[in-house]
Length: 169
Image (cartoon, rainbow, N blue to C red):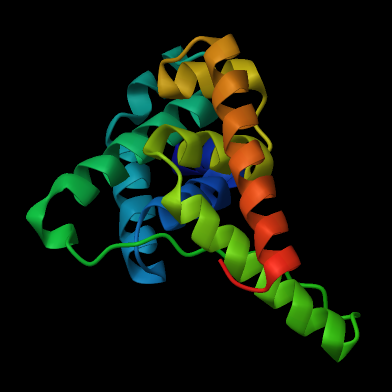
């Protein structure tokens, strides 16, 4: 496989790999390192890459596993989830402040979710994978993915509603 063939396969989803890594790890730098590691592993295994049914799903699974291993390591004591990939520049200042505040609350709520629910929310609501793909990536039953997502969304909705109704958590 040539470099250009490899890049044509990998480039369409490398941003998704980065966003998943960023969701799971601390910082942009950590996510960039994780993305680079996954891409290097794919490159070193490029002769077999065509044997995979879904290279993108395989890459996302590699990313998840790499990041979880990194989080378990001792060097990851200060890692936490941060997420802010939504920006709308045509909104009034008051709306921007409210939106930013809501996004911060949602990120904080997601951070408090159990690991499996965090991953399901990231892959379904942010990365837009379908349930079967998520089930394969996380080695879960598709029904379990739906249940985990439903429970996570319920927690997010309840905590966000409580925050907005009462002003503070």
